[in-house]
Amino acid sequence: MKSLFYQPVKVDAKNHEVLFWGCLHYGHNPNWEIPIWKRRGFNSSEAHDEGIIENWNSKATEKTTGFLLGDVMFGYGGEEKFLNLMRRLKFKRLFVMSGNHQSGWKQLFESAQENVVTIVDQNKEIIFVPNYLEVYVNGQAIVASHYPLLSWNGASKNSIMLFSHVHGSLSNSELGRMYLEKGGRVLEVSVEAAPYPLTYGEVINLVKNKSEFKTDHHIANWCVKNPKP
Image (cartoon, rainbow, N blue to C red; front, side, top):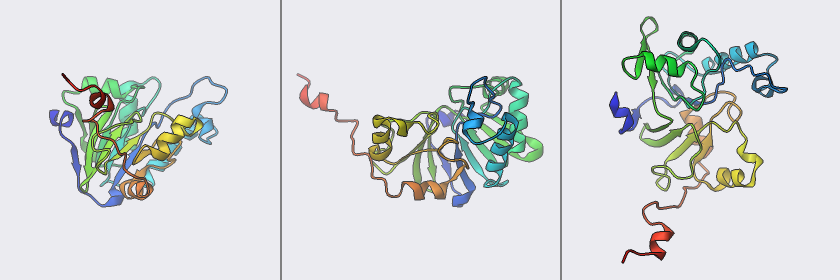
């Protein structure tokens, strides 16, 4: 499926059948004073991992097309552990980014002949995609990225930008707050910002009052001030 790297993914489905989520950090149990699972309100890494699965499955079905925006899994186990997690999550097609923490994703991707792995007995497809992906859901342009972006394709033409990576931290700085409030139709979908995965319908509702990002990447101020001779 090389077309994934130059053509947008097109999804036609009911609003609740498309899910977006990111930074699950499944299996992440660092030796920190306050580890991520504790910050998320769980009493142990094991309880956190079960909670992640339960929260996804509470909104997913066997018809779901899902998008996981990176940092899915941590720790040892690699390919086998990643596949075991995929078996427990409900979906029909799941587009998965690596993020900047690639455990499991990397091992399974490198062992596969293509960027699609099928779990035959469950009729599921795992589709490996880059950390930037252009998607049309029911005709609506969406850019899914592991990282928050200031400019993206269609930013001034009603496109929505979904990201994870930052774990709800953008509101801690003035620049981050400016981005969230005035950066256009942007929305964080990491677990800290969205304890449950967001349906396409919820995404539309959450960004409906956000204005488009008024910028034109073709005509920069530098070009205007410094025309070619």
